Image 1: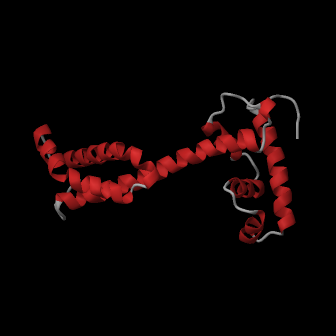
Image 2: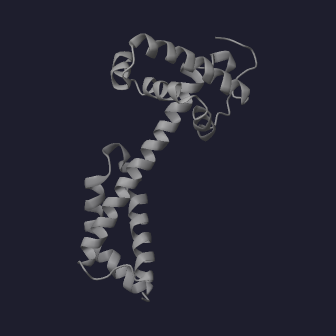
Image 3: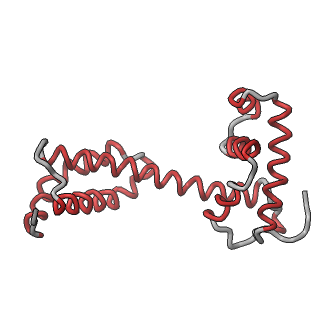
Length: 178
C-alpha cells in the first residue's frame, strides 16, 4: 500500500487524541517524561505497518492505533524500568556491596556489571539479586525453601565472589579487601 505524507499527516491529526489517551493510560506516572518518544514510536510503527499492508481493516484505524500506543507504552515502561535497574545494580554492586570507596572505578558500565553478575553461580546469583531488590533474608529463605542461615551465608559468599569477579575484570582496585 502506498501512503503519501499528506495522507499519513491526516491520520496523525485525526488520531492523535486517541493515541495520547492510550499512552496516558498505560505509561507509568514516573515515566511521563517519555510520552513524546512513545507517540513518535507509535506513528513510526504505524507508518511502517501501513506501508507493508499490516493494517487489514478488520477494525477501525483508531482502534488499531490505540492498541499500538498501548503496547508501545508498556514497552517503554519495561525499557525504562530495566534502565533504572541497571543503574541501581551498578550502584549496588560497585558501591554498597562489593567495592569500597577507595576501590571504586569511575567508568563502571552497567552492561558489563550485568554480564559479571551472570558469572555468579546460580545458587548465589538468585539470592544476591533478591537481596539487592530489598527482599529480606526471611522472605528469600521462604521463597527458595532454604534455611535462613544458608541464605545469610550465600549472601556473604556471593558478595565475596562478586567482588573477586569485579576486581578480576578491572572494575575495582587490585588490593584484596573483604
